[in-house]
Length: 434
Image (tube, rainbow, N blue to C red; front, side, top):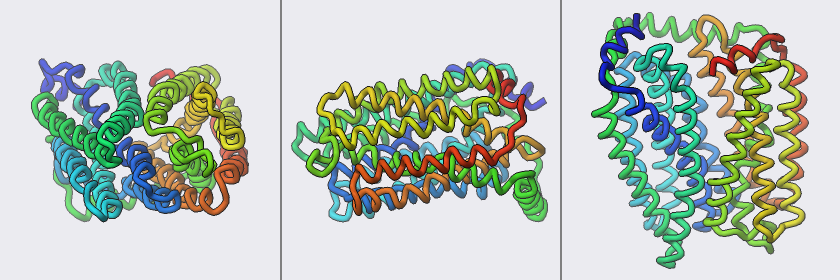
């Protein structure tokens, strides 16, 4: 019924007008918080220990997202939340640009990134919910690839194009901060445009407003039942361990890759410019990630998760060796670096398929949507905690020792796969449907 109502309310508003822009706008603030901030702080002279520790804390909104996601539905409509968060993100982007010239820019911009992270996490909740309300079941299946594509495009823009723009503007002005001021100014203007566009173009499905009011006791009871149901699931302890440890090497690696590439050869890095890093991750990095994810989805659809769980874990692990090679050889030829990044990102994209499928598998049941949100909270926690220590390890020892350590951590990735139980048929239907 809701889907039919939504279709009537959306008459004349083809999803092509808003699904691509909504998911492009969903990806950009996440990239700004998690990737652009890391490159920016490194270029502006922030040390690895401080950089990794404080930017890892920015995962927290995604960790605790399950605790406030029910209230997004209770308090206002999802359409209202989408628009409100886009305006908030636009203001936060502008605040970063204004804070950068100040003397205490590190503390000031971190505070704004916190606000941006909370707004981005809330926007994720509202956008994904609105997608299901604003489209029929047929349209949801039809556009799932489109939403994923435009989210990936935002990654190309975030870790590629915008980093290149920042580097070139800074070089042209001979002012390290100028390029980043321009980039966040562009992002602020973009989100103002997006908020205005979606105010005009987002449909108004009746199902987004026709919600029966609930008393405080009802809300609390449902909230408690949801969490209690999650922790009563079979193998919940093993599942949480899997969620926390499967990405242990990556959680540390991702915090130090850009600093490693930007640091001088004398300091153990590769001595690249931000422009080089932008091109590497905005081209072959994203291509490798997308191809790995596509291949992972295809093989899982053919044989199921149980068949591919261990090979995918090994893929996540062995491709980390590319950074061990880069740290010890420190090649000057860009093609070698491009090749290593492609291999590592392909392996990660392929291996990450198993992780996401397991989250879907474990979430199945009465509170599937809420339980999946709880799983993603544990996923973010598994990225946050190890990432906080990554900079200290690299600074205390060396990049070479750090990347060898990430290989040691791969034992956890492979080990937890031997603990979990997965139905032999799971994965085929889920991958085919997506």
